[in-house]
Image (cartoon, rainbow, N blue to C red; front, top):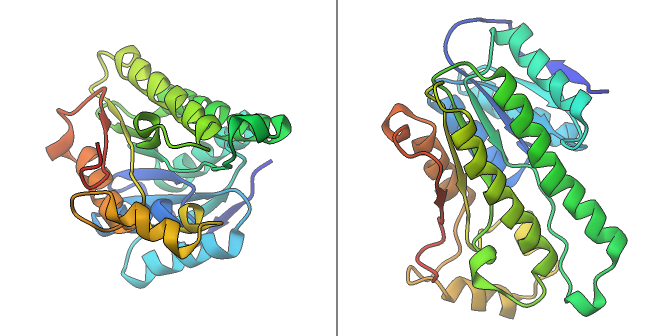
Length: 254
């Protein structure tokens, strides 16, 4: 079951965004950016309640509207409850940004298959569940945004299981874009390159981080705000003509 923490008064005015994985990293930056753009935001989180409430507080401090909603994204009942909370508080959902995910790395020869299953459950089943709810419940004219990764094309050693899960995300996203024909909903994926988040930096030494930061022609790691800006464009009216695409936001890595 999901737990919902209300932190603003209910309102049916304006547009509403559900952002999963919004307690930290790219998800949090996206939630805050969309709130700055005038959306009421549902801050989805898996287990980091305190961090999710910090995201809500940051949004409120700038005059925005937000609530926190807990869910395992692979649990269809819990995800449905997040959409229920959005509808009860704000009247509906216009934008879904699915930023929740996990990254577990090891060479194929050494990869633990139980870990493989857990990663696929979150990244593949979780994306499918969120897309299913979005397809059923998003208001016409809205936007859906998922997250792939540039490692799908870069073929870094150690990333096979993770890249496989993100390849599945791309496939599902492009199909849903076509399944929603007639509803004026654009559906895209953003595929970040190396981005300075806790998820990316975990377990990497300084030499590895420096090497990855030097790869883009722009010669730095991406930031969560870099990616949030791309997301904000794609879900805005200015980006609505972009549909059924994977946008590789990676500073120019080929």
